[in-house]
Amino acid sequence: MTEIQREIPSDDTSRNETLDTLRVIFQDKPDLLRAVTLGDFEGQGVLNEVRSKDRLFGNPVYQFTVGRTKAGKTTLGNLLFGAQAMEVTGRDDCTDYVGMLPMRSDLYYFDTPGAGGKEHYENYARLALGLEQIEDEERTNRFELRDYGAATTVGGETVGVREQVITADTSEAEFAEKFPPDVLVYVVAPQGQFIRTDRAYLKDILHRYGDKVVMALNWFDGKTERVDIENVRTQIERVDQQIFGGSVRPRFVEFNARTGAGIHDLTRVLCQVIAPEKLGGIQAVLDGELKEHARVQRSLHYRRTMHRIAARLALNTVDQQAGSQDLVSVAAGGLSQFGVLTFEAEASAAAFRKDLAALVHREADQVREKQSEVITTQDVETQQRDIVTREPVFDFQESTHTEKHKITRKVEDVRAKKASEQLGILADTAAEALLSWMSRGPAAERKAMWERAREDSLDRTERVVEEEVDIPVKEIRQKVVDYQEKVIAKVNEVVGVTERVIGTKSLEGGVPVIELLLSVGTGVEAYCVAEGERERVDRYVERERQRVALALNRAKPQLAQLLKQGHDAEEEIAELLDGLFARS
Image 1 (cartoon, helix red, strand yellow):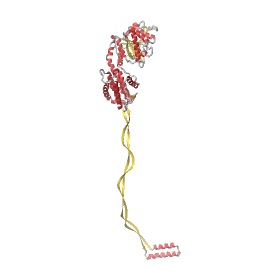
Image 2 (tube, one colour; image 1 turned 30 degrees about the horizontal axis):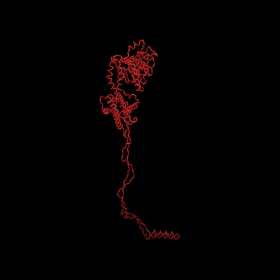
Image 3 (cartoon, rainbow, N blue to C red; image 1 turned 180 degrees about the vertical axis):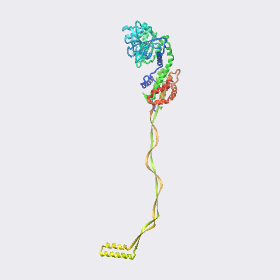
């Protein structure tokens, strides 16, 4: 296997890059890798308690939320209320009334018009709070109070809101005495800075309400920077110094009105301001079962995130790269950084990062090797072979002998005829001769006549004679005395086959990648939440590996079936892992 040269990330930039790479991989799930801390889950628990638990506070608590327009006051109120009761437009001056959200817990949330917009809107808030109105602008002698206690949402619109007009003449009796502020939350959008309008408004509030004010710095995702936060804090501290001369320190809380992050911290600070006799059970909720519930929920959230990372990486081939590093290592590194952020262990994590990075890269190499298939080809070795036949070699022997054979042949016997026969013949002949002579014919004819006369004087007979004769016979004998080979053709034949490696094919990560990521993820979690003296991080990872491997082995058939289905089964794989580990 080719050695992969790499640098093990060790600085903050590299750690963030691995987490950012994971976010790119999961851009279809933008909220998946948002680190949710213990405070976030405690905040969610607080929200649930405040919204639903009857008489959580000892006595009604009146919280007034103030600040410049577009700071997020109405958004915070809707978050606490658990419904989009009050309209939020995101524009200046979206609130021109005082909204009241009574909750079952006996918390009353008052949403006030923002400062810095239309002056008479700010004067609505100033009238409700008993502050001097802005003199050089339009003054008001009334404001509208909207009670959302019985409101419901129908077809996207809020109905059932009770409206009441509070006048300057009756505001003291009808409003100020009835709803005296227990705490004022001044909401600031830091990216908008803390301008002159804020400073003037805050000074008037501090003059009247003193240390009942909490400064809530609202983080806007993608807009607020840390430098904005620091600049705003500096401006507020200057105002506080001018009013109190350093005797009272401003209470700062950072939160997110949209997501609820930091609500737990905000609630704790509010409890420092609210009179003790009004706190009731809220302090017990903050210090008691809420903490354990938050720890459990944080772990579940972290593990569900980890399972979705593992499910997606298991369906990708192990040779995929993320920049100059392999994707499996980057995923494991990003997951460990996500764990550090989730469990708020940045300080203690510095001790294990180098060891963990080395372990991750070593384990990732082993996974890639295990999930690689060797590609081979067959080399065939041949040689030429003669096709041979055997032909006999003959010896020929010749001999002659006689054989007796009986033959038949014709024999002619010739004898002279008797005298009387001859006389008759001669008479006839003489007569003929006489005639011939008389006719004086040619000589040839005279000769022929003579021959005929002579022949007629002989008696001829034929007979068959059988006799035995010796006939010579020549005999040739054929004898095989040897055999000789003769090549009649040539053929190529296979004499051997050898396999030769021509490359490797990377397979999907499958169960080995799931085991690696879950071992690293849960090992980091165990390290981060450990109390007292910690062991080396690789020991936590190894213990978790044994537990993870055992659980995965039980689900091996189900996992194998889902992995065969490919990316369509990604969420099913994650849910299977939830069932195996998220509840443990």
